[in-house]
Image 1 (cartoon, rainbow, N blue to C red):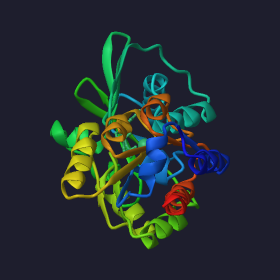
Image 2 (cartoon, rainbow, N blue to C red):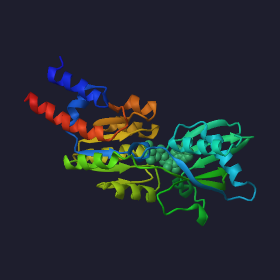
Image 3 (tube, rainbow, N blue to C red):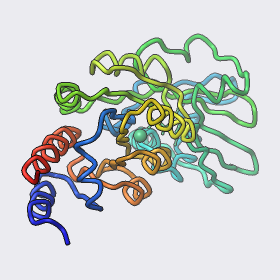
Image 4 (tube, rainbow, N blue to C red):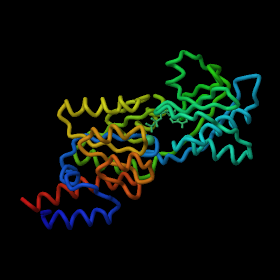
Length: 288
Ligand code: ADP
Ligand code: MG
């Protein structure tokens, strides 16, 4: 049977913006010593706006490049996809029909248009394939940049900007005050990761991390005797949510993340996690 004090506390925390999917998670919350956050859509709003975009090919105008990118992104539920599609709509661009669509988790998307292969991919993917990047498509600012490839040819880029959630800074302060180490693991590029990490005063950050590498990071921390919580919103975070001692999904995120997690942040507010930990500690103190 569920001790009464826990039953009451669980329902109260649900009222505070947390949906607790199993009771063990609530018990475990007070034991957390390391908190790993995803960046995009978790510490940031995941509300990307296109800041600039361009063609890197004689064959296409920048609008044509954006139209191809938006066409491919129709198949994705990543915040980047939403930002690109919103821009294409504003510019009233006509989209192409895409076949053979495929998500390249943590790297981008690909598909065929008029029998030719197109991709929208990360800087990490470009590095991996050793495709060189012209200067104007690079960035030292906190921009997220994606590249558009036709076959293996680079034809353009789109730069997007996201905002840190206003509740992220107080949430992280509160977690650190409660004695936790706070880390960020993101698939995004090192510059953006560094900017966000510095803004939030994190203990450390990891960039260009693929989904299975997020799992490895959780395992590494667990080996170092941390009791690890992972908070994320994306399909790419699901394996790490499953590996963590406590998996927390952001309410505004994907269904896959929510189904894998132990706890859901209904209001997508990271401050509710700090609340949960304090609440868990107080509740179990009462029982002893
Ligand atoms: P995060 O861990 O910050 O949530 P992801 O692992 O989801 O990031 O994505 C990592 C990188 O992969 C993105 O920064 C982007 O470069 C690329 N990417 C992911 N999804 C898409 C997409 N739908 N379109 C274009 N690029 C994408
Ligand atoms: Mg994310």
